[in-house]
Length: 262
Image (cartoon, rainbow, N blue to C red):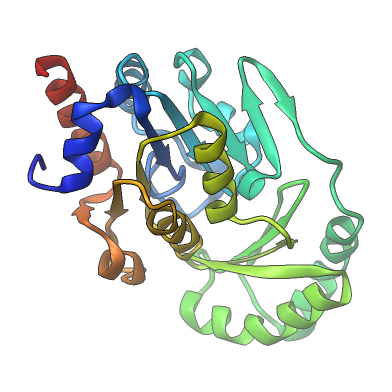
C-alpha cells in the first residue's frame, strides 16, 4: 500500500487528505433487496478512527441521506463525517440536511413505472422510490441481465419525457435529475475543503465520474475499486482493487494503522 504515490501523500500530510467512499457495494454488501442492505459492522468504527487523522471523510452516494444513516448504523457518530446523497444534490453534516426540493419529473416518472413494467410483462422487477430519484431493480427477477437490457430503451424514453437522465448500475437503472454526479460532487467538496490529496473508493459505474474527478483534481490521488464480478470497468481504472466491503474496511484499517505509526 505504501508504494502507491497517492497513499504516500496521504500519510505525509493527512490533514490535507479527503477520503471519499460510495455506500452500496463499498461500505455495505450488495443484497437482493436494497432496503435490507446494512453497513459492514466494522466500518463505522474504522471511519471514526480515520476521521481523527485526515482532513475529511465523505460518503458520496446515490442513496438519500436519510437512508444511508438508517442503513449505516453508527455513521451519525463519526466525527466530521459528511454524507453527499443523491449524487451530491443532498448534504448531511453535523446532523443537518440541506438540498433542493425534488424535481417534479421524478414523481411523475414513478407514477408511470408500474404500468410500463406491466406492459412489458417483466416479473420480479422492483421499484425503489428515493424521493429525488426512482430506481428500477432487476436483481430479484428471473433474468436480471436480460430484463435490464429490455428496460434500457423504454426507461430512457420515460426519463427524457420527464426531464431526467438514466444512471446505470449493478442490476439497476435509476431515473434521476441531471446536472450533478459523483464526480461533480467530489470535485466541489475537494475545492471547499482545500484538499491536497484524495482517495475515492467505489464499486459501480456511477463511481467512474468520481475516479474522473480524482484524476482531474491535479493532486495526488488514489482510486480504489471494491471489486465484484458484476462490474469490471472500475477495476480497469483503479490504482488498487480490494475484495468488496470487507476488503474496503481492511484497507481503511491499514491506513489508520499507518497514520498512527507515522
